[in-house]
Length: 220
Image 1 (cartoon, rainbow, N blue to C red):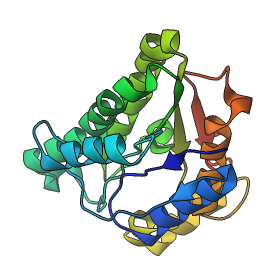
Image 2 (cartoon, helix red, strand yellow):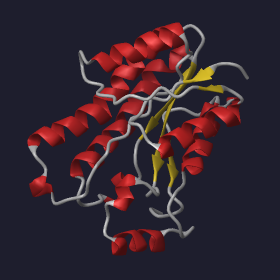
Image 3 (tube, one colour):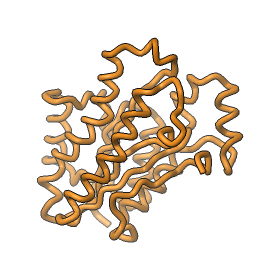
Image 4 (tube, rainbow, N blue to C red):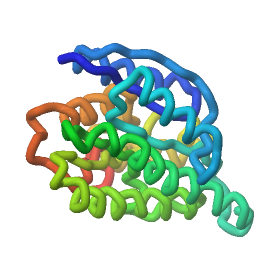
């Protein structure tokens, strides 16, 4: 197939498994570059990604994740609210701007990460839910704008995954989540990687502006 995958994210084994599974399924190279991203205007990370893309990669995707601890909204400061919104909404915006000069000539695939939490309005993380809802709208707007360049823009909305966020939830809440799924388990990294492989493949060449729900049937 050729090409490379560069996946920008907070360090974490789960995200490394998603990226490596994604690259392996497409027959691409996988290189892990670990750093803590703060994709805000003027931040050094944005320039780092841009320079890496220019010198070593054909960057295809820049999903953003946030580390959120569930708690009452009254305990969430304005600073934390703005930080989550900046990282989760401004991050994909700046990544898209960074890769567009390289993609507009040949086309390609951009895959954003939303969240299935927007369908239920999960309590304890309103800033996260709001930011992921914004990603759905951003994905559709970019699909319209970048379509003439043969660039597909889609989003994956994962359901509850085994990881840091669900680990911070009370056990009874995790059990309730699993019980509401048609497939009664938490999601795994390869569940999301498989969805990303499809959206990045030629088989999804006429799929754009879509939100692919990968949640085991939790929100149907």
